[in-house]
Amino acid sequence: MTAQGHLAGRVRDFGRGLAVTAAVGAAAGAAAAAYGWWEKDQFTLREETLPILPAGSASMRVLHLSDIHFVPGQNKKAAWLLSLADLKPDLVVNTGDNLSHPKAIDPLLEALRPLLALPGVFVPGSNDYYAPTLKNPLSYFQGPSRLRKDPIKLDWPRLRSGFGMSGWIDLTNRHQSLPLNGVRLDFSGVDDPHLKRERYAGWPRGTAGQDKRPHLRVAVIHAPYQRVLDHFTEADADLILAGHTHGGQVCIPGYGALVANCDLPTWRARGLNDWESNGRTTPVNVSGGIGTSRYAPVRIACRPEAVLLTLSAQA
Image (tube, rainbow, N blue to C red; front, side, top):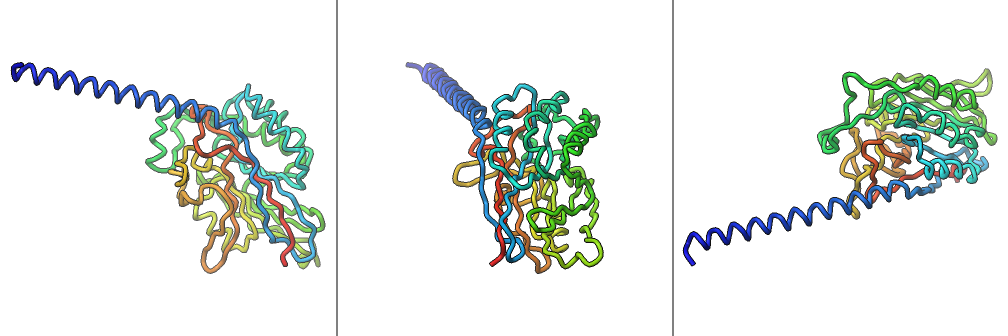
């Protein structure tokens, strides 16, 4: 065989190798996408216990919901949300990003109907104000996502009204107390820090002579940016509840999240951890979230979750 023949043969072999590699890569990508599509509907309940109530208090069950990102037709998600009322929580805390479609409000309120009959509080996330948009998923590795210049507005006032008319308390840049099981819960919430809308309202004060009653300070936020965690920790919060991160959404088994979509360290993108700032420490629960953007409907090694926190008395 001539030198030219050898060269031609090597070129053909190299081309076949590239084709095989491309086919294997495409098959692996398709398998990962199929698995991610399946996992997004494998709803789980994470349970945590925190001994932070005043001494002698009865235990309290708090159901933490976040990042539902509801889309009409998500019947499995709706049925699971309805089933959460069977947990009989004493309180529901919703940390935002309930929507992922302009027509999602009515089916979402229906799915939450049994929980809306219970005491609850809420704050909004960016995807309560604006619909998600189609974008390159690799852009998340370049830092926190940004709002487009011409966002599609969602009917947040109508959703907020639906929550409020059911009795849930709106904590958007405001505070309010709620007596529950013999304990005064002092809430302070902010608008979405991801949109830089947070304004701090401080903590509620009791009526004359009541500030010495047993109470618990709970901060409620959507996106757990460090500046907000620092503020509430230094303001003596007893507990901070947040969402937004989706737990990373696409994780590496044994390693965890690759991104948090905010400045939170990725190892804190999901779970219950202590946050320290200026000599103070506060437990922070970051929900891994229930849904996904309608344009990225996959989860890998990061199943959707609601969180049931059992608050018990301090020893």
